[in-house]
Length: 105
Image 1: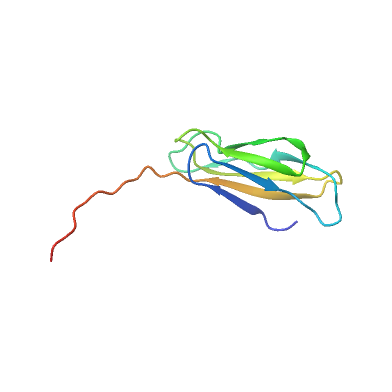
Image 2 (image 1 turned 45 degrees about the vertical axis):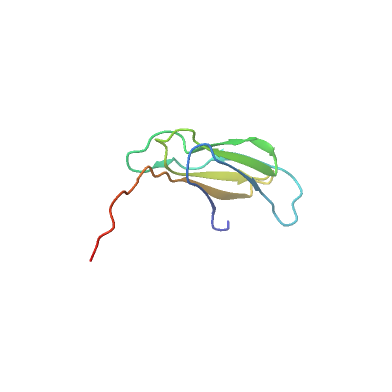
């Protein structure tokens, strides 16, 4: 299996469409969450949702609408011969702002 690809989101409600392909294979794939989700410090909730769940080569991911969600989740794409590959979806959010005055020398 090749190393997993990564899809990154930087805020709530963002979307991205990915296409899965395999040399010599013209069929469709199913998708399922792989191992457990890893939430970032102080974060809760689902990282992203996806559609459709099977029968396609194109899948759309949407990052969580919650500003409390962050972390990563691996997803496995499988063909009809049980050949699979992974995609890691990462969600980072920052509500950090810096305000200050310029120092005079």
